[in-house]
Length: 97
Image (cartoon, rainbow, N blue to C red; front, side, top):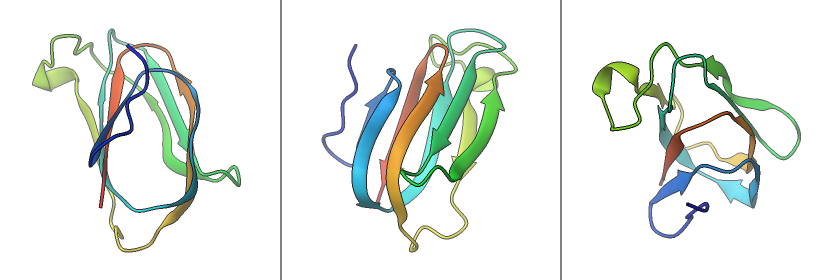
């Protein structure tokens, strides 16, 4: 699968610069393939959006015990771009406003 950024929920599985302009994020759900998969997200200035994540369990078939979730405490404040720096395996679902 390749990164899909159409619609309100992005499905990302490949590291890289995803968006360069302002982006309003309400939540992110990481569905790792296996325990110990790593995930790092940053803005285009290098600031962390979601602190580095190490999966506690896999969720390749969307098992709820393995899904890691981040809910933005200030979804009305935009991030300056979105970079998926690291994704060892799995899919990151990013819900934008």
